[in-house]
Length: 332
Image 1 (tube, rainbow, N blue to C red):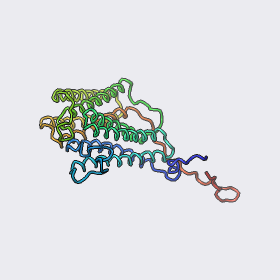
Image 2 (tube, rainbow, N blue to C red):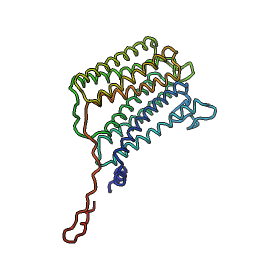
Image 3 (tube, rainbow, N blue to C red):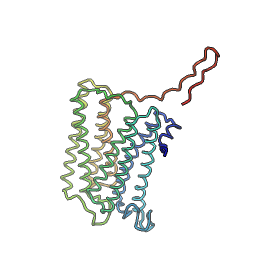
Image 4 (tube, rainbow, N blue to C red):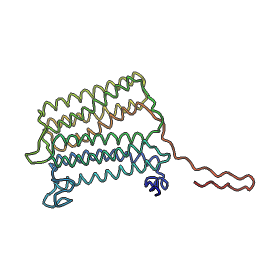
């Protein structure tokens, strides 16, 4: 039996996306990953977490929310539908990366990694509903969204550079400092999910929704402590980069991270001293995504991998010396 044709190969034979298109598709996947986090937060903050009380359907009898479920059902179901939009965007990334010449397998693999993280998180989201918004499952749901954002940022970065062996722009101790900064930022985000799990926004108005049994003020103080650690590491890295006369790019990325941290800190204090109003908490969740993106970009800016390869130009016809006519080009 002849082998079935690969649909991605068929598309690649008929379509050659530009490098700019691939970069824009990768950037769009980053934006969609952020939107999924923010809209997921909106579900929680509007107490719509159980707007659709079961999964994968909305109710036992209906795929979609019924009028009796009100706005909460619409909000929860709309967030579920955004997953399909995200899948479509990731699909475009995979197809564009595969069709781009020359084919970069590393970029295609990153696109597929995004797809499988989305699928896994969709299942975790369903388990979240089926377990009545268990706070530990909710936290895992958010952390998987952070994993998706990580892969999306890596895909975007790789779409903007080549496939050369990574060349370090700074010495190893400086790179290690940047890794400590990224690790501290990740711990900051993890502790932030615990703060949310122990806080008052359970995601549903019913009294039976569990919370993480920790003192909210104490875990919030731990979260603030990590904020100061991350800010201190950011400032230390900036002075280090300046001392070793690092290129302008890495120093600019550190300044961007510091600016995002300052804005996020302001939002966090407004949230704390105003009893966590829903809108401010939503802005804080957006800020956590921006902080993570900025921290990843700092680490990625400390090495380079050359320029992305251009599409090979078609061969020009060769003049036939005897006939004075262009020679026939060979067929592929």
